[in-house]
Structure formats: structure tokens, C-alpha cells
Length: 179
Image: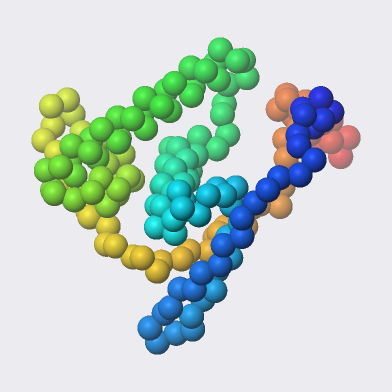
């Protein structure tokens, strides 16, 4: 952040701290503290805050589908025009998957988010024009499912490529000639 936008930030911000307990049958009751800028307790009831949190979580899942499932974590283009085209292509694929998932969910009488995004994506990759929608896998409801944010495999111990490949090849060629 440059100094100009930093200077425009307020000196302080008013927040509301909300504590609530989540009882767990057969387990410990959890006490959760949330800090929010939604200050009006009459307007932002616990139920409404929980609903907003759920909407936010769904947006996080959508971003995960874009970045991880569709492999958009690193864009390949270097020019701004190329990046715009690449983003448009990702948006097109994402919207197509969502459209097919919506259609299949209506037919299977479930919420669209219950159908596997990956299954629909894979089907779209192999389905021919006018292919009939299959019955997609319906993911079970798992309200207490928590997954760790970890990487299963460690990255390789090689250095990152910071120069053009041709320069690396020249260095290797010189080493083999001098050996």
C-alpha cells in the first residue's frame, strides 16, 4: 500500500464483539468470539450473521473451484490483454459448469452445491454435443466436517526458474564442456 491510500484510512474503527456457545452432544461446548463491523444488533441478529457467514463460505468455495479445480492459481499470459482473455476463458468454463450443475440439480431434486463440481467438469470435458445429462454424485451433508489446510505432498527441492530456459541451458553446456 502506498502512503496516499494509507493516509486516507481512519485512525480507528468501531467494531462489535459477539460471543456465543455451540453445544456439542457428547463433546465439549465451544465458545466462539467473532468481531464484526456490523454494529446494529437489531438489524444483524445471530441468525442473519450466521447466514452471511454461510454466504461468505460459499463464495470461498467458488473461488477455490476457480483457483484449484480449474487450475487458475497461476495465470500463464504476460500481457494485460492476454490475462483478460485468460480470465474470460476461466469465467466461461466456470459458468458453464455451474449452468450444467444447476440443470442437473433441478432434475435430481437437490441443491446445486450438493453436486460435485469436479464430476460435472469432467463430464463436460468428455461429453459430446447434445449428450444427455447423467445422474451426478450427490455429496452428503457433513455439517461438522473440517479439513486441515495443508499440502499433501512437499514441493521438490529444486530452485525456482528465475531466468529464461536458454540461459540455464548455456550454463549447463559450459559446465559439461569444462568438465
